[in-house]
Image (cartoon, rainbow, N blue to C red; front, side, top):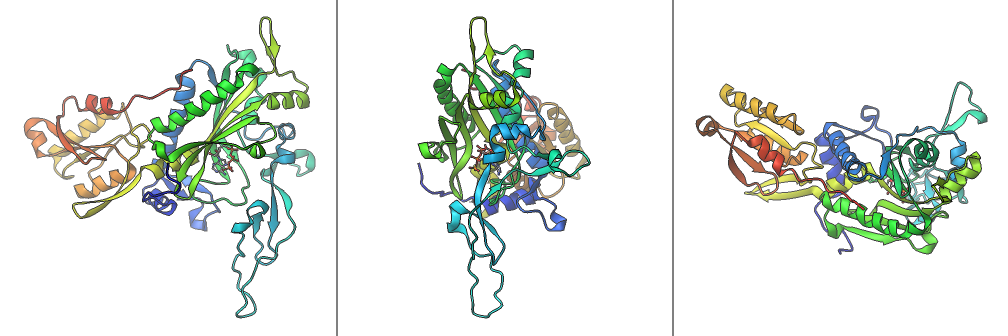
Length: 452
Ligand code: ATP
């Protein structure tokens, strides 16, 4: 396993491609942006949707023991008292009196004074740091017309608590029995002090979290199951295995509620970093909410009654999308022509196939190409493009990560064949137009699922 990143991708190159090809734009761009906030363009929406759809397919559709939830972003603030976020979800911070920037007290190596010009020539400003203070990472808002303490509320910093507070609703309305899970995808908000690295750390991001409720004696075994199942999921969707590792938290790193946590780490160009966390949270959450709400949160079976333990795989949809893009990013020179290509797994790729008439103004070619495009559309995300020289159209599809391009040329009119060009090998094959839809469908890999 490499220690440091050796690929051609950098976060900057991936961000530049993402912007150029309508994956991700800086947010509020015409107003100069808003720190570490991003808007997804057409292909980015499709890519992230595919990531979320594959997650939901693997966890919910392909299993019988996990159900869905979509809880509110603004919850009763008592939720955050019970969960410990109001008291504990903070980083100790120091402020610099010179440049007015704020730094994490546990990461002062990166504290560099914000280079505000000194009034005295020749003098370099240095950070003049305050004592460390707690800084809560939750965004505050007010519910209703009055801006007073009693109406203060918070944007959720994680989706998990919405799941715990619905434990009773779900167990009394769905046919579930431990071991079972509740899965949720949705936005979370954290007023991160040091956001950055593009989609890696933002203040508004999307999470994919699943709480798996199990009989206490089975918690360790399910923890191990989910660590491996989640690792496999990334590998099955194309992340190279040598760039993925499981790192178990040391005892002094563990959250107060967790008896074991493992991070799935990916070798980003910035080094090994967390992609997803899998935690054995014990009965901490259900007990805390039972105590604070006065509602019993337990499993009552025919002859048993207990508070389930919870195993939680918590992933980030944006961070995963970034990892898939970074892993897929490649540059090469073919016959003296440089090309950039996103070698995305076909299930993740925003567009599966492009249909291209060799020349865009030949009505016989256009007619055949449009017909093939219309035939493919009901089955997959497909694009028709007749806009520019064929080489330019191929380069565009390579950068979007489209696995196959189908080109209609003059030979098509003679013998009813089209070429299918493979994004990665660049091999071109002639196949019968009749049957092209089935051929492309057959090439799309089957999904993988983590059955117990
Ligand atoms: P980190 O140590 O990177 O701050 P964390 O341990 O606080 O992450 P969790 O609370 O476990 O993260 O959240 C689960 C997942 O949500 C993370 O593994 C990551 O994929 C995603 N995530 C967390 N914070 C952010 C963020 N600010 N921007 C984008 N994704 C995030």
